[in-house]
Length: 411
Image (cartoon, rainbow, N blue to C red; front, top):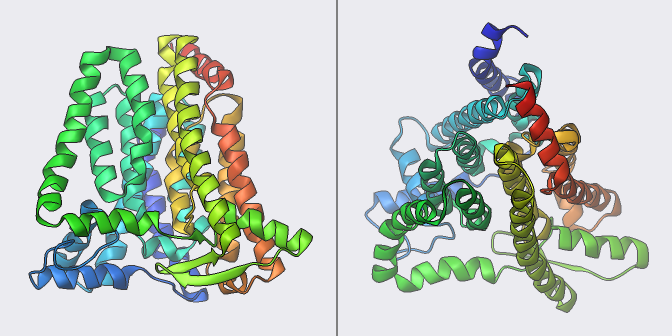
């Protein structure tokens, strides 16, 4: 691939994303029934437009950054759902550009850059039209640009982007240990303190006034997620479905918290265990990142960081008690950028996980709710693929060796 093509690769891949969005994606949307969250977002906007304050005057399950996103989309011209889809397209393009530029900064070949950015560009086709009706592409874009910021050593920007991501959804809090460790490795504790202060300050400016004016509403937002049962598509639920298929273990499905979950003592126990496993995984990934940095050269810490964030992101899906299908877009920036011998397998397994998700959602989703075996098997295979992907992305020596090879090839 010529240097001129490589230079324009982000633009070409952005064009691919736009063409895929306005063409094949609309065809997919016409084949499948919509299960959309946009009416929830629009209802929140309507209340804000009428002068109501989130958390004080009405409850909202999402953090303040998401409320701001709902409001911003509402002031855009055109119907709410149309402007929202356009906003998600912009987020997709932003993710494509960030992943491609990060791949270049890591020293990937032009073809590998094209594959990484191309998979992201085509992710709505791989995962389905649900990405047009959820705001998770915004979080994917923030994760992708945070990776770029660290790889290009813009550490303060990385902390700022992390703060915005946390305000959009709380889950990026799990990235703090890995970012802290890599920042310390590069620049020491004083620099870490300044970066973390930027992150904490931005969050505090937004959250503290709301805590003061609407403490109950803010707590309700947190308790909403703490109280949710084991969601039907989670890995914990897939484990119980496996027991049902193999040993006839009885299961009961309940509709609550805007989705479907498993009820009963067994699912509650599995939900608790999965939460413990999640905390343990986040800690182990951070420890693996620290250990790897101690035994590798400074030139490879970007690759170690990408692996740490990718593994943490996948762990949030594998061990979380809620795994909505749109969450899979979070894993793409990291999984597309794994170096070493696990890089290409990670891309392949990530693509397979997206395709398996579209295989059951939304067409077969209600068959899973009815606990029908063929549909449950698709979900089980998808969750197994995510476990495999976690193993592929885990920070270890293979990632460092690949990064060292890339470094030698570009010097």
